Image (cartoon, rainbow, N blue to C red; front, side, top):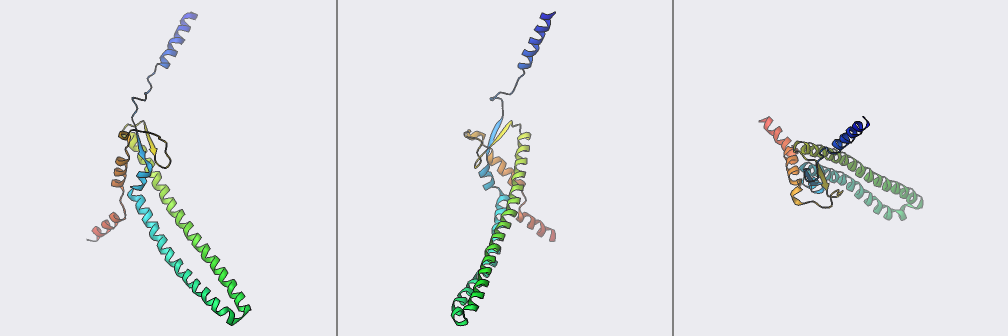
Length: 189
């Protein structure tokens, strides 16, 4: 009886170990150059352009204030001797305070732009990751690796590179600002 139980246990162990696991040769893998994917992504380009324009607009306003400040500083130097030391000290303190305020305003603008663009880019990256995940499931991939700035693949055959496919599909799916404006124009007709 013991022999039968022992033989049964050994047989079950052998069967459990004999389950077919996917070998490296049977797995379907691919990789995506994540840097290239973002460089060629239409939505990422639109986000960059949007914040470049915003930065230029904010910069113009700030440059105007800085020019006005520089004019007052130049005027201060000329008037300092004429109006006396008390006036020069008061005006100098006022100018110094304004200079600090301009610096803080510039810093706040840059920080705001970075936060806003960062949120949009993070959201885009999250959507791309979800898309790649769904693409992998739909097309039967076991693994899709990422290369680029945060490389997780040190070598892969070019045949496994699906960057162009993913980029095209994501860009085809994206409805950019020009598409939205065209839709508005068509609605008016």
